Length: 68
Image 1 (cartoon, rainbow, N blue to C red):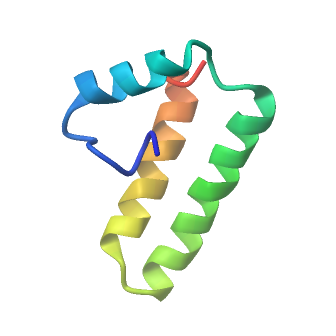
Image 2: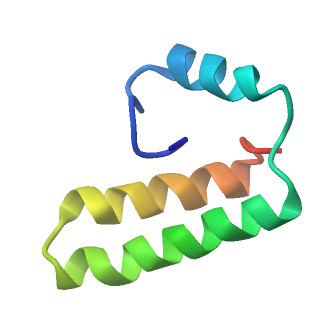
């Protein structure tokens, strides 16, 4: 959710995540990492550049600490 919808509107992303009132747990961060890797594997196989891009965005945000 945090990396696939409305990536062009960081204000909406921030509001959505703030609405939960907490940061991601380690298990949720792990799940986001697995989802990103899955996107990077399947995107090229499915010829889905949007899927691959989502995986890259997710990993980038995880590495930047955007979900912490």
